[in-house]
Length: 209
Picture 1 (cartoon, one colour):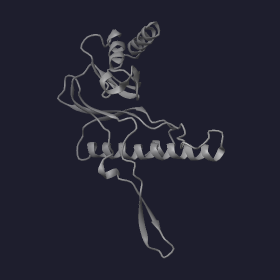
Picture 2 (cartoon, rainbow, N blue to C red):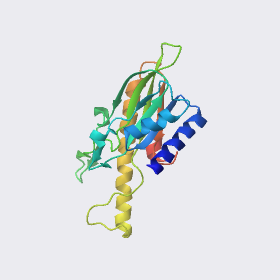
Picture 3 (cartoon, rainbow, N blue to C red):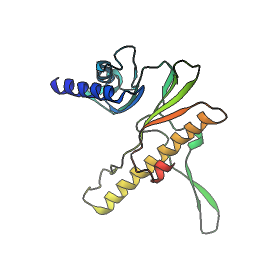
């Protein structure tokens, strides 16, 4: 309890220092803890809206322990609607074209169609206007290698394969997120903001996507 109290107080202090109107969060294991931290801040203490879909105890706890980290959002502005995006849009259905020795092309399916940490999409009203903006909070797959059950972390080949798997998933998630963003900004002038951790350098393939 003491550690929890210190952490929520630190988050509240950081929010007050930032003086931000919209804040994205990552690594949320408990929606109630996030709400406590946000409401302890002076800037958000009155009328803050806090979202962290999937981090409710009923959804994200097993035998008293959190299962998966989620993303969250806090704002002092009005939220029109929000959604947690679990599946990739159809436009991001990924296939790799490959040619056999005879020159015939075939498509290789990559059956990954879900975000490991679903991005949060919210439509938020800009105060003193009738304009709403779209805000995404995303946390793409990290660089941490993904190992198969029989692979060893000390094995350089296994480590390379594990890093490659993480990179593939991160890039697929980046392409799926871009597909949703393109759907939102086509043929309109609605502002759109992406917040979060893309988990790679600015010049990496996944971040450029």
